[in-house]
Each structure stands twice: as C-alpha cells, then as structure tokens.
Image 1 (tube, rainbow, N blue to C red):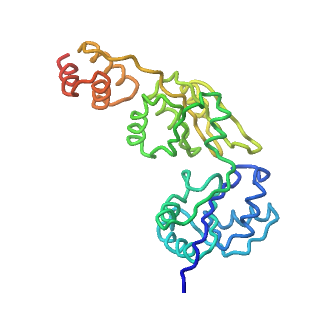
Image 2: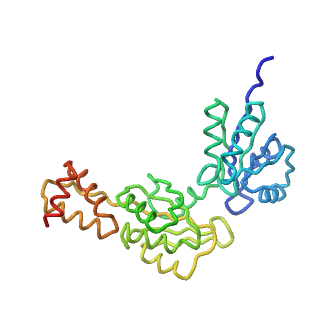
Image 3: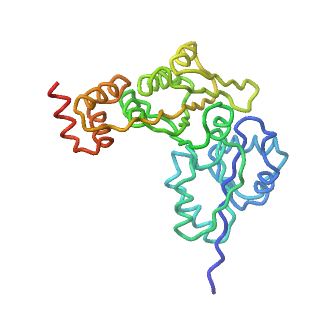
Length: 281
C-alpha cells in the first residue's frame, strides 16, 4: 500500500483587535481543518462564535509550554494527510508566537506550508508610526533583565533601519528609558497601543518625551517603533578621533568594549590599536 499524500499546514492570521478584520478565508479554514492547533482554545472558541462558524476538526492546544512536545504529533497528522490549521491569540503564527518549530518540522518533511494572510501588529504599527518604512527590522520582545536589555539595545545603537519591538505594558516605561539611554534621548519613536481596538492610541515623539508619558502607566498591547540611526561618518586613522568616537558611543549607553570594536571596524584597524589609543589617554 502506498503512503498517504501529506496534508497541508495552514498558518492563519487572526484579528489583533476587531473581529471584523478577520477574513472570510479564515472562517472557511476554521470550518474545513482536520486539526486546529490553537495557542488558547478558549480564545479560539470565542473567535469561532464571533465569526459564526463551527469547526468540525479536533482542537488541540499549542502554546509556548507544550510547543516542543506537541510538534511531533502534529507532523504525524500532516504526514497522514490531514489539514492542520495553526492559530495564535492574535496576528500571524510564528511572529513572536508559537509556530516556528512546527513550520521548520513540516518543511523538513517536505510538507506543504501555506498561510492565510491578515492582521499584523508589526506592519500596522509601522504604517501608522510616521517613521521611515522603506527598510525595517523586527526585534520582538526585549530581554526582561535590565542588563541583558541594555546590551541588546547597545548592539542596535547603530542599526540604520527602523526598528519594531513588542513590549508588555508594565515594562514599557523601562524599555523606553533603556532605548533613550542606548539610542539617545532625541531619537524619534512611536508607541502604538491597542492597535485596531476601541482605545487605540499612537504616541509619537523623541524617546525622552515618551518615557515621561509612559511614567503614568501604560495599558493594553504595546508595539514600539524607533527610527534607525543616522549614517555614521567614515573613520580615519587618527587615534584622537578614535578616542572621541569611543567616548561618544559610551555616552549613549554602549559598553567600552563594544565601542572600541565598533570604531575599529569602521576604521579598518585591529581593535587592539583602538584599545591602546583609548587607554593611553
């Protein structure tokens, strides 16, 4: 007997706010799927009720805590020819949500993977931010610990593309303060809160101003958009210039080690030469 034809893995975007943003194709996929893997099965039930659809396939939970353990059984279902639909609480699966492991495993087995496009907090925030959108990078959630967060942002201090971050409301003030330290208080940014929902709010301004605004408390889902760094001037072979540049980078939150490495790369010299120049002073 020949092996069954593999099924299809469908990644479906769900509304990030208003249920009216759900596509008719999402409703159709919810009705026809053999298996629905949902980040939160209770939210899935509410979504189906709001859309007026009744799933006929079996529903299983698929969230950060069981993603690794449940992926093999979902791949087995796909290999058996079933249509598996993956949905998360909001937006596109695998974008700072469960999904990457299942997609990678399906691709490894040469199983077809497709998507139901739809709402995205990343693209929505970019579109309404008023900041450059021709080139951007999505950085997801910052580390929770202050030291790790500072180091991550220091690495991004010279990133020329617009940056998009997700953040928890209770950590928004601390994240903005760390950004102001790493990127400079005057760097332009936007905090997008409760996108597409009734209480949607977009605050735009320099990071220092946004820190003050966030001090009163922030509620709801938060996406932060920060403009990229200005192009840096070419670095010559003058040790005095190296010392000045290292000091400038340290003043915006970069560690001396990283600042020396950055200047050495831009000058095209071994980092030891920049290190010696800095410490001779």
